[in-house]
Image (tube, rainbow, N blue to C red; front, top):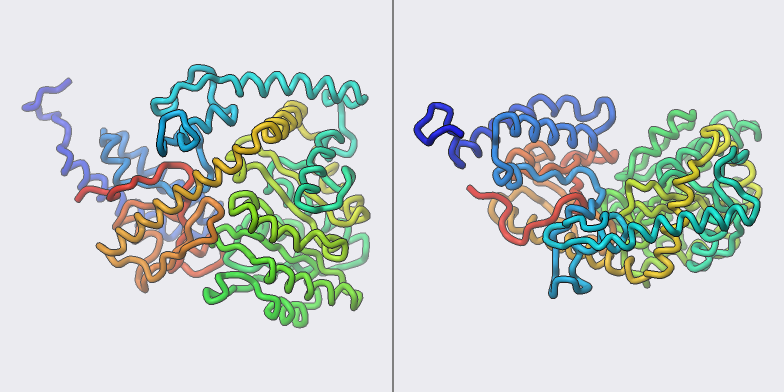
Amino acid sequence: MASPNSSTTLPSISEQRIILRQLRHQLLLHYRPLIQQGAGPIRVMARMVADLQRQCHELNITEEIMQTEIVNRTIGDVNVRLITECEGVPGGHGDYRMLADELGVALPNEEIHGYVARGETYLWLRTQMMECERLLLAEGFDLRIYDILSVGNPILRSWLAEEMQHWGFSVTTDQVYLGLGAMDSLNKVLCGLSQMYREQGHTEVGILFPEPGFNVPEWQARSYGYHLHNYQTRAEDHFKLTASQLEEILENEPHIRIIYLTVTNNPTTFAYSPDELSAIHDVVSRYQEAGREVLILADLAYIGTGKPEEDLARMATFTSPDVLRHCILVSSFSKTHTLTGERFGWVTVGRPDIATAISPGWSNTMASLPSEWQLRFMAYVRLVRVRPWLIEKLRAFYRLRRQRFIAQLKRINEEQHLFENIYIDHDATVYNWSQLRPGEDAFSLFEKTGIAGVPGSGFGYSDNFVRFSIGVIPVPEGPLTNS
């Protein structure tokens, strides 16, 4: 190690901070023109942060400086291994560090920020996988051979049909298909529907995307030849599509046959109320009665992250047979159970005949769903059934981080006046959606605060809005950076 008087002495804390901020400014100049290119704004912003972190490591900038000057809030996923929050007594219900162990992610004796995991759940899940395989073999279903339909094993699908019945849905196993997370499920549905509409002789099929919204399905729909209709929602409507707006859109766009609807929205964090959903269903039902079929492709990825009674009321609007028949519901454990890397998703199709018609979206996109993946999915369904309190603990954890982050943004705004509106959400999702003052955008915000969010253009909206994730890293209770 060099001596303090050596010419290779490391820069002081203040010098490191200056160097890092200079690097940050240079990268902003490089990445700003790329924001709408390639993989899209979310990944561009995440790549910019990763590039800055790499350069800082090469220049021996300390981790302490990097943590206060580079705050990556681009990707939404929660990494349970990085949870540091402990509210109340260590080992108690408010010790969120234990989630990695309680969910079976942490290995035996793995250290999680001062908490040593026992790993019993990790091992229990593997035992359950073996028992589930024996259960399938006893029913004559061998996951180790080719699954002709590729929609997943019937036992797991029956369990998920039961899960949907808990929300009030009357569906059978044949109406539930498995997918590798919500994104894969959406892709398979869009693939299957495009084939169905071609066979029905429809040469132009439109799909409506209210914005701001999750934009991956737009890329998927475009690749299957759909005609995209993008509609910019209004702040005064909490960025939600209203029934009157939908009525006007469908009247003016006769080719629209699918509405992509995120019931609890990414990026805005606002959720549709039961009355708002019922009004949308009424519009669609009127078109059904007039002989024009319009399907709602409902993304339920964040149903389960909000207040249970409110989520139940939202879901109840879909349960009527007359409503369910024009709905395809996409569900996932990624956000509700923080199991993003596992890719556990499924589709519930309201009409059995549509379920049959779209099945080529599975059989023509993969030979068979992975056997070990299906067994692990089954094990996790069993885990949640024996530990229903896990979901409430995760809700409480999300709530804690959202509240801390909103408080942090308000403190920053008092000092730097960067925000026009810091929106208070509907107590759901793992995000915050806020409006910047004129002249500011996600890049200038990153330069001034070190917080990297995703510009509104990443979701089809204006760049004076920004989405932050509260997922990957903790939210400090005090000030973000030192001057």
